[in-house]
Length: 356
Length: 127
Image (cartoon, rainbow over all chains, first blue to last red; front, side, top):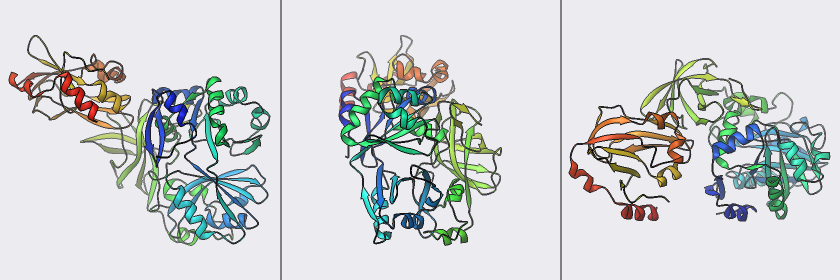
């Protein structure tokens, strides 16, 4: 089992560790629901070092990424900008989702999911032109600090971060000493993701904890991202579906002359389903992945379901017949029962507020 | 892991207490609640329902997963704990206090099939 630089900290406080994509990671540190609320109301700390940073450098780096990503890094107007993109196969199916950073000049960085890291790297090498260098950055640790009080707690914990971090707009990043700080996250709250040398991770973790940032595990990370309406690769999307079928049409830049892997297939392929949110009318159980959804237009399936600590009922993302619309009444097969629910447009929660 | 000596146990991680009137009070063990994680939903059986031994009788759902709670012996459900259903986290906080349902057993001899605390502790240790 792979371990992040923080494994000694987890053992010291007896965190509940579980295997995740080959890594030993904390599920929670006592209460995943309290951790969830801490992020919505205060500030939480996530170790995301299992995700892989991949640097792409060289004279061909920009053209290479314009060819391999469905979103167009030409949209990045200056170093420090970042964008979200899918990596597609030639059939338009999703190989992974990632954030691409323009670090400087001919230097870009992709941050990809742990479960797909090895296949992503192989795919990049397979398509890499002569004058671009691909480098896996396992020497970096990554921490996410998320929540309405994340910024002030970051400033007090990490000297020098305020000057660089405070002016950052969403999806912008900058270097603060050894830390590459970006205003990104996976929770629907304000906050930052920090990339730093692995050897400095324990110190940063301790400083952030001392500043009152609460350690959070994978459990809270999943309920937070689902409330925020953010897809999880492998669950809400995979190689069998295209970005427009996952609520990600906005991430595909197909209007220009630019050609990219999967483009012709996407243009030829009409979406056959739509990914939307579902909320249970009553507290009658908890929706789970693979449960059947009955709609007037046909059947669909829950791709991610959980109990929402903010809404205090069950919420889900579901792959539904194309004609399904927010507001539609549907029924979910929860275990052996039909449960009434309604379709909503995600997100469910953003910046501490319920939006549905 | 807390495994009270005074209770009997089923291999599916229910605890059973025999009351003075012969009825059985049933809940899930400390080990079960710890493995499930924080409970967010509980479905209780209706009073009057006849259940067979090892039949799914209640459902406890955590953020992570749903799990059946089985009748430890055959009998009739005489009550469900509405307070636990209204506040599922009580089962995490006090698994041996926050019972789930009460049964009137079909036969007293059935209890012989349940484990004592020592035997259950061995099951837990082997998981």
